[in-house]
Amino acid sequence: MIVADKKPIEEIVEAIKDKEKILILGCNECVTVCEAGGKKEVGVMASALRMYFLNQGREVSIDERTLERQCDHEYLEEVRDVIDQYDSVVSLACGVGVQFMAEKYHTTPVFPGVNTCFMGVTEERGVWSERCQGCGECILASTAGICPVSRCAKRILNGPCGGSTNGKCEINKELDCAWQLIIDRLKALGKLDDYEKITPLKDWSTERAGGPRKVVREDVQQ
Amino acid sequence: MRLSYPTNIRIVLVPCTGKVDILHILRAFEKGADGVYVVGCMEGDCHYNSGNFRARKRVEQAQKLLDTIGIEGERAQMYNLSSGEGPKFAEYAVEMDERIRKLGPNPIKSAKKKAA
Image 1 (cartoon, rainbow over the protein chains, first blue to last red):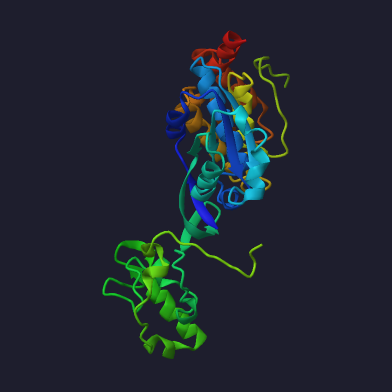
Image 2 (image 1 turned 90 degrees about the vertical axis):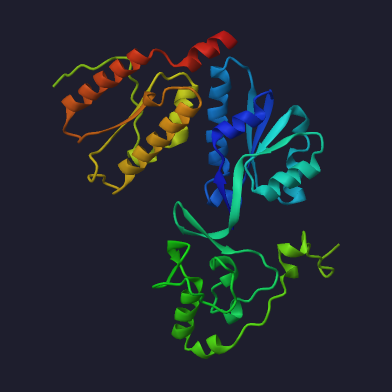
């Protein structure tokens, strides 16, 4: 999932301080799972903002709504008939949702309510960590299912580097060395011979370095 | 025991303090409560293992959030006692009542009245 973290309420207040009719718009997908922008977080933020503005002596109307997703036309269309009632939207979706909202509703200011962090997993409740950088050319088949692009600080494809000590990375003693994990898992799979194979230069043009990306699938297009 | 405690306290029964959400606490303040305190079982004695620890965390979250929006966070509190400690319950009620009286009414309440 896309992992996001809550923005400090002060930052959101600063962004919407001169607004009067605000819609707090949550998303039922990834940000709900990582407890940053689902229905509950919408409720907490709306309640806090209502109290803040009342305390400031200002009458601000704050409504709550949570869509199934904010990254698809069909769900974002659900607010088409009410969007004109608001002078701003605080979207608790990831950066994708915030942008799609802004693209769709040109005249309504949209403010991000979360900081979008990475694509990752829930290690345990309250702990999320990165697993994929969407490099566009997956190499997990040759790295025992562990991604050196997202989990090695240097993103090296033939590791480990000299900074790997006792299975930990030199940038942080808490951080596992991705290449140590790869070697350990190759061993467990009985495929340590694969480690001897040198991975050739990766085509990074499919990664963000090649500019904004797009997937076009004519077979499913209408 | 027939203990007396301040009459301005409204008790909301929950099956376990683990049921209490930050949203319940915030809504209470939004509706004008001057203070909210959660009384859970003794730490380590939760029938559901961690309900009272969760409640404590949520109270702490609420305190922080209230502080950032200009309402004294100490209006939200967490207490622990065992079900056999009636006098403690009354004692905590008095303590909370005194704490809130020192702080005065919930500013949201007067702001709402002004707005109306």
